[in-house]
Length: 470
Ligand SMILES: Cc1cc2nc3c(=O)[nH]c(=O)nc-3n(C[C@H](O)[C@H](O)[C@H](O)COP(=O)(O)O)c2cc1C
Image (tube, rainbow, N blue to C red; front, side, top):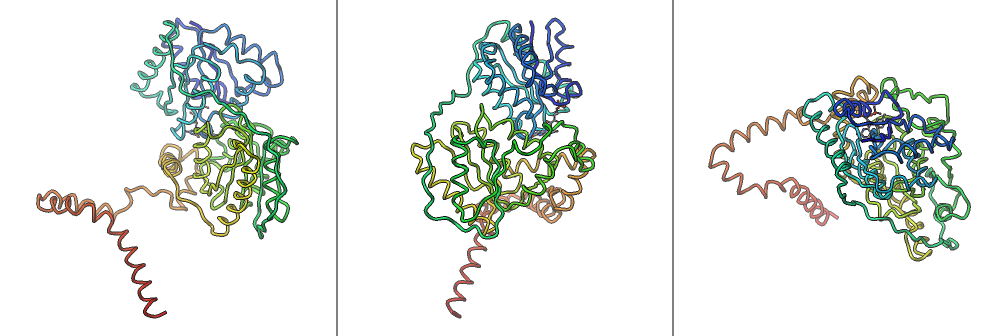
């Protein structure tokens, strides 16, 4: 059997993910696995149609495709995303149709599920027979039990190909027929005060829904609002995964392009950020992905604390909850406040006008209140994964993060809460006594809300004393 392995790691042969593939090669020597470096060679693949066609021909003559890639910033690396866009742009779709596919992603399990969902959806869109995904931790390969699992996954994939198994689809095709948005004049312009507002967009072409939405949003304000097209920033390439940033805070692109200066001077200095983009396949454009990947020079340290964020999106966001989850998560682990998403999925231009006006107003009001909503599982759980790894196995590689986490109290392990530990120890002991255990179980519900009741009764006391002494 012949399998085309599409390598998503920008590190090419020095990829952890590829070592999983090498393991498969050793275990199944009678099958042919052809590794094709995609991300590392993306510039060539993009510029040279022949290089792209060679890959397509290789896939065409294969029995199956293994999408093998690291997770970068909750998805695949921007270079890999670009390749996926090229498949659709250059009529490469037909060779994928009815081919068997599996996904192998390595990561530290921070939003690896969103990367898997994305690749699964791409396989469904390409009409492939998607068999399944294998998402190990980057170091699982050194554990015997995990090696066995990898063999199990591979056998399942190969057996599906050999036996021509039927496979299920997990993602409905996307239906998207947008109106041509025609904004009206703005009646009540808003004074944003001294707030710095920055709009970043991946499209500045006149006449598109996105450009018109951005323009309408900007006109909500009394003064001019800065907007920058990602294509106007000199960005030499996607993140290479070298992790220089973690060790000494220096990105390999430092001084070679404009990204870091731009990010530090414009993005980090804004009070309100509006990200505008068009949906391509099941995400935003690869240009946006490049932006999010290159932001990794700031490593696992939040860089937008307290800022207000809005998204203006042209495309079927409502039909891609995976993308919505990624963007929600992004805002949460950046410790910013995501105010709203405005898309062009409405019947009427006036609805979009009203929504953009409302977004403009809420962004300013939330900034005035310094409001940041509480984290959900996405931000809260994600931060704990970073905390554990930076304290542990990633500490040497990410010394910059370690210093930051120490200084900002992010090492909030329960192990170091001695008062709580003593309380727990005492109560565990007491509740071994049947009578105490009975009382505890009877009072459990009341005790759980005792602190809440205290807050409310204190408020009552304050308001009563104000009535007595107005
Ligand atoms: C820029 C960058 C972004 C990353 N983003 C994530 C992420 O969002 N989630 C995660 O679990 N791991 C993330 N990782 C860790 C990689 O997925 C992990 O190290 C992977 O095994 C690397 O595979 P490779 O050596 O094949 O490139 C990131 C690593 C880098 C360099």
